[in-house]
Length: 468
Image (cartoon, rainbow, N blue to C red; front, side, top):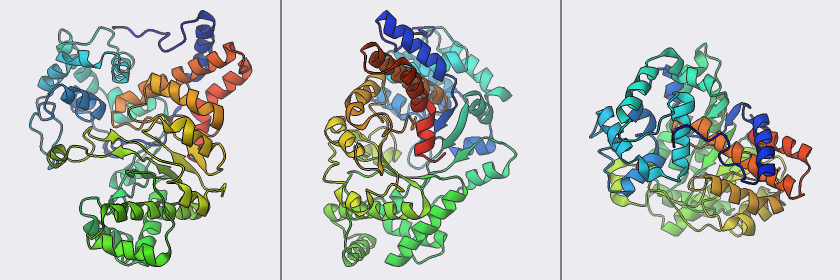
């Protein structure tokens, strides 16, 4: 498309478009608060140049390489690292040309908007990207990446990022966060506690992970009491590096509040590798309730990301490992699944639970009504597969009528692709402004209220919800 349309994503009716434009002007320059994501803290710690355009835009971004792979392009040919860390293709220009030859595959997708935003706004490239311009783009971006103003910390400041959260396992020593903290840089990069490796009996190496978990935490985590104490110790350690949240990527939203003997018995079976799939799910569900109780003590916001059928392709999992684009949405039940946790702690206003979903059918039927009554629940934004303009609009249309705006938590980008962060937030702000303008033009919201809500959705709600 070349140069970005300044009115992209705004309504076509002129009055609503003019108001959306005015609302957007008020919020477009607000700082970015990114409370959940997967950028590498090492980038900010070492502040080394990004290696080449392909390693900036292609190899870390599963939105990009999964689309290319869907058309038969090998992840090896795209330089995506294998599970052992090796890369079959290391020639950045070759990867980039392959990307450019197939850029047409992204027509109409949010990825194209994010990429074109980064090309223009970050690197000043306004020509249409494709095979004919691939080398010129590569050379220009490579020249930029060698300059101090394109180092990770400089881009962080240029993007207007006030705070960004990365996500680490409790087995992580947080060395990069320590390096950031001990440096003289003032950028705020915090961690988030993601305990999947030690709460999911089906996670590879679970028993070994728990043993190492105990060693790191200074307890015997092979006993139930020691295991819970290890979580408390590691959560406290993560808080030293700015953590305000925990994050849980479970296959389902199931929660349990089991009697102590049952919980201990399941834990012992998990350590022995003897859990059935049903028992593993029950144990994960019980640990969500345990994590919620810990949150009442230490204040961490509990994020639940259920519904991804993770690593759907066993061969690709074996070759390339986790997070290679093969997490697929599945149907998710919330009303029954969350009831044990909510019966235990759900009416306590001190608790903050952010619910995400990959099942749009649950928005109006389950999620909005739950968040619209339980003081502990807030709705996370439209997430992977639905963090598109259409998905964001549907989210607002289906949840606002029951949960309102103030039982949601603004936007988070949930990305590994650093240069897409400002683009993703820009899309979210444009979509919200378009939605608010439509409410005003159809007589459902006063104009002055729309300006206030726009700022809440872009900035204030996320800071409040995540205690940032």
